[in-house]
Length: 312
Image (cartoon, rainbow, N blue to C red; front, side, top):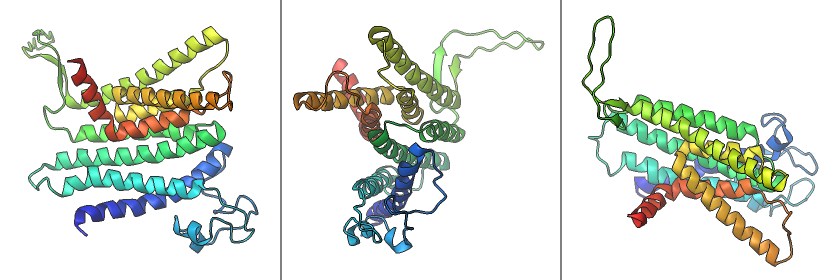
């Protein structure tokens, strides 16, 4: 096995461990319970789960999907969440982090490595949060603030950390080509351009993306309420899109919204065709938005570039 694939295997195992913890969050956070105490237990009989019955994927398979004590079925979402998180971590480490160490050469600067690794870390955390929120919203129609708002804070912290490692002229943008005069007690004259430095562009741009994503859904929510005289979208969805924007930026977040809306529309149409829903039925839109966020995190930039190329 080459070191490149070894990174993927390590990422998969690490993801399984995080997926096991994510299952605890999914079960407890919507009920506002602690994810630390009490220790893991069966939701049916309350019996404590032994350490050898808590091995991701393996224990569920060996127990044939049933509790060792009461023999009640263990929900299928437990192994699925562990598998999905493991696969996500494997993909991120293989495609984002591993190339930082293999195939790019050692001539790259420390700053480049730091930004690349922070980007991969952000994508791994985003996947962890979106997978958890997807299941929680599907089961309970709840998107806990402990995931959405904490996710926004983590994303902005990572962005600030990336800004520390940007090169002198990296990511800076020129706002004006006009010369400016700066009057001061020293009579200083600046003949340069007006621009945002790389760190300013990165940090302010991401904050603007968060505000823009939240404002867009708030506007849609207000218009729907004005027309239909009822809420069509919860504030949790607003915070969720803001979180995606905090990690990915504004346009990838808009792509997530488009993909999520499209998936929800298709699913709703299928339910209507099968007579399992009507025009007043509620959908877990946050789950579809999470799905759009996962797709956008992996393929968003490529899809956006393809779309821009079609317009040219």
